[in-house]
Length: 473
Image 1: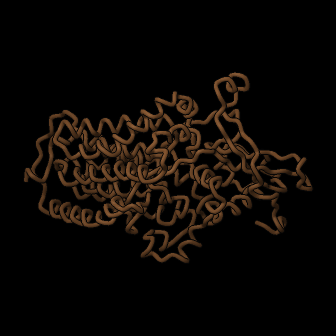
Image 2: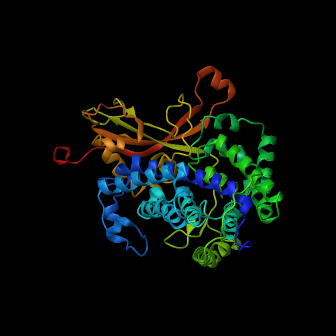
Image 3: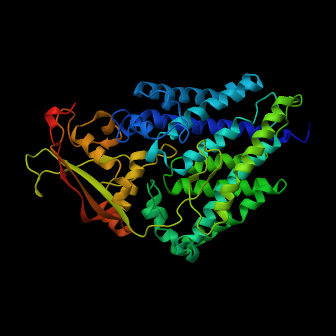
């Protein structure tokens, strides 16, 4: 069955699988370290409350069968262990069916987490990791050469990621058509990185070139993925370079990295393939059946891409098998940040001793330079960016966050860089204020050492305290 396999992509598969296992490891580590405060039994959006009102058919998950924080931790850390094993190449030591089952484990575990993660897991890269992870199950191991149809489907995902993102930009904000979006984006993006300040201060003509190059990479180059080699490799390599540029310019969790991993699946690495027998019949049947299913499910994402009412980051089935993607269809011109403060004073007055909570990734102290966190995903920091755009984004969880801060909740404080209050002395009041942030100029940076300048806008949440602190657990 020479038509079924592509032996020249042996090394390509190896690089792709090990890279994907590394991203799985990051995703499970993020879940294990953050879940208690976000979706745990005492989290801001508890899983038990969610599974009570949402049936399993709409959100398939192990946690519909049972939930406890201990069980969730077991699943998350098990996902870390299996991902590490795949990263080390354990699947290559197993028979073909065993390797496939091993790849199925992290997909099923992460699907269970995403489907109960609610707004904390509503990002497009969650579905993208699941869609790519499901295909990885059928790539095979050292017993067979990589199946052509699975390699094609990986390129099909990459095409939809890039082309969909390009279309949403052209149909969305006019600044993409005017080539001016990057005049603002590096300053207003969700979580700037250590080099974002410098990217923002690049000459405006270079920003125009960046946007034009982005349009070419997302609207033209994706079609070359289906061309013969070495054209497909050149197209994928250009996408990789573009994604690495984005990695340097900001913190986008693992969105850029999984796009790079997908592009690696289209690169033909020079290598002498080992001599292996043809694939067993059962494997051919399974791969072709799954491929036919995925192509049939692609109808709705394709229809969405071609629609003038295109939406971004939408799953069309509860298993996240085929999804639609896109990012930054519109770009904010002004950056707002919600700054949370607490005081131990008996009365909450304007002149009280208000102390600011510091987040790990989102801007706070104007003199504190952003750090690099991606591909690690700071979920609370990202949602705080959305909260600054509109209080409606924060409605389901912001009140619970404030309540946990008033209690000095240990798990919640672990999500922060620093709390201004000692563990045994929680604040009496917490408030939130909205500020406008802008990057300083070169001159201001030299004079003040601050990378941000901020201006008070309005009150976001008035001073709040616990109604009955003595009766709370």
